[in-house]
Length: 226
Image (tube, helix red, strand yellow):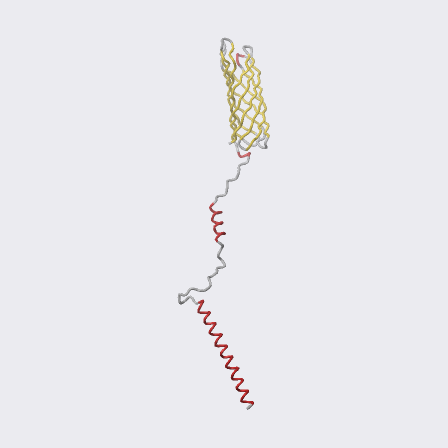
């Protein structure tokens, strides 16, 4: 009887193990069917790609690629040309008449290197009437070389220029035109890369009335760099 009871207990245990195995297999089959997409059913969980980037990063990359990089800012030394415009005072003394003239001055310069510039300019001057209500009018046109550093905020320089001059009123037996030269010093104060303030003082020599005149000229103005 004892052996028969032992065999019955073993049979019950075998039956319980078989039922547990069968149940586990059924559960696994049901889960596999839920992820199977061959029959047209959508999977329960979305597919996740490790290579996918967040939408914000993609939008940032597109905006960065669309925006062009700003052009490099110009240095002060990158500007080769200078245009000056200002006012001037010319003191003219000769054996014929004296005159203190106020007028305008303009010049155009090109920097050959960091120290030397080619320069050309025009100066005008006007004074009150002399003689029989005749106005004094002066004009010179010259070209030359200017020497000075083209860097930093303060730029001192010196120049020498040669050319011609024209003077009114005309006197008897004398020409209105004569040789002229100018030499002097000046300083430019750089407000920003494209604009400077300038002051200068010059010695002025002319050859009117078959004589030599030694005079001076003062000027101030603004300089545009381009």
